[in-house]
Amino acid sequence: MEQTTDNRQLSADNSQQKVIDLTQIFHILWDKRRTFFKVWAVTFILACIWIFPQPRFYTCAVKLAPEMSSDQGVGGLSSLASSFGFNVGGTESQDAIYPMLYPELFENPEFIVGLYDIHVTTKDGKISTDYFTYMKKHQKKNLLKRPYIYVKKKIKAMLTEEDKTPRAANAKGINPFMMNRKDFDLMNLIMSKISCSVNNKNNVITVSVKDQDPLVCATMADSIKQRLQNFIIQYRTSKAKEDVAHYKHLRDSAEIEYYDAMERYSRFCDSHRNVILQTYQSKQDKLHSDMSLKQNSLSAMETQLTEARVRLQEKTPAFTTLKCATVPVLPAGPKRLLFVICMLFLATVLTSVYLLREDLKKLIVIKRG
Image (cartoon, rainbow, N blue to C red; front, side, top):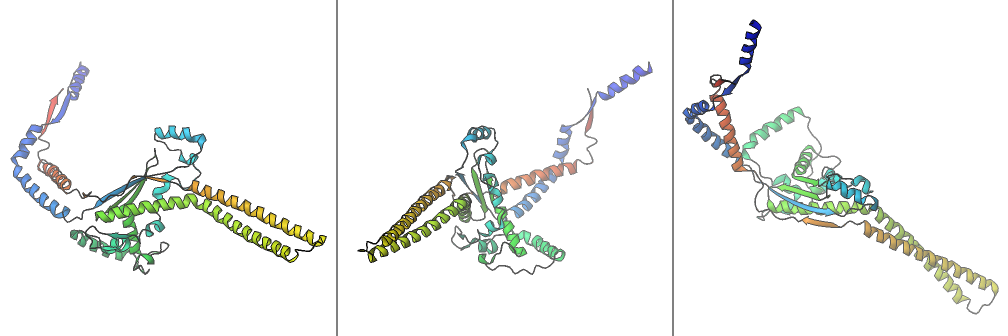
């Protein structure tokens, strides 16, 4: 009998649910609405003070599709895998650097330093210089961050040893192998403004650039696209170019030997025109045979050189620009209105929690199931 009573009591306790009375919460917060008005006003002012001095930035993206070399035997497999979002480019191409590795190129210091000499001009025409000087001396900064930046530099100077490596005065003085700490930080800043991505399905390359000036943004996006194309062409055709240079050298050597043999044969024939001795006739035949061999060798080298040039043309990839660089009209950020709204929402949540911290237990109502 006692066990039955305990089971009923336990069942009754389990059927009880703790819920929060939202109506009472609303009434409590409504009674303290003046506090919210004060918090909202202060939050709005502080958010505006912080976000409006932030310099605006623009983004420009270009898309290009490179020509891919593939084996016919795996073409169907590649198409089938691409439809499911997989890439079998490692098996379809003999290239060591396939499109999925192109984003890694944008982390190469030599590639980034190679962008420093690009000439840029701001939209208002007030600044016209190379990209290195523009990023070093003409970047807008939030004045409110200066105390933080100053303190950060002082702390960093105390914790790290002094860098005695001389800093480059211009873009030509940058050595990617050994850079000053400030030049290294500038390179990382530029890396953060440039991005490259490759679509796994269709290998479309997207190059995106972020900058404070719209014209500089579009100029750098177009220039980086061209530098990337040149790199891909240089890599894909490096072996074919070596073959062309090799066969051209052989052709030139064969041509010199042929002209030399032809000149010896011609001189001999002119100097022994009326001689009918067999000794001279044999030597003439030997010189003619040697000239013929040199001519055949020259013809073979000409054929090899022509084939090498054809292979070079076949190896040279063609690019289709799917989206060209365009000077952006509207800034990409910062989203000032969205930032202010988020700050007001966060202030509302924190204020509500602070005001209800003492009455939270009283607001929990036990509801029987």
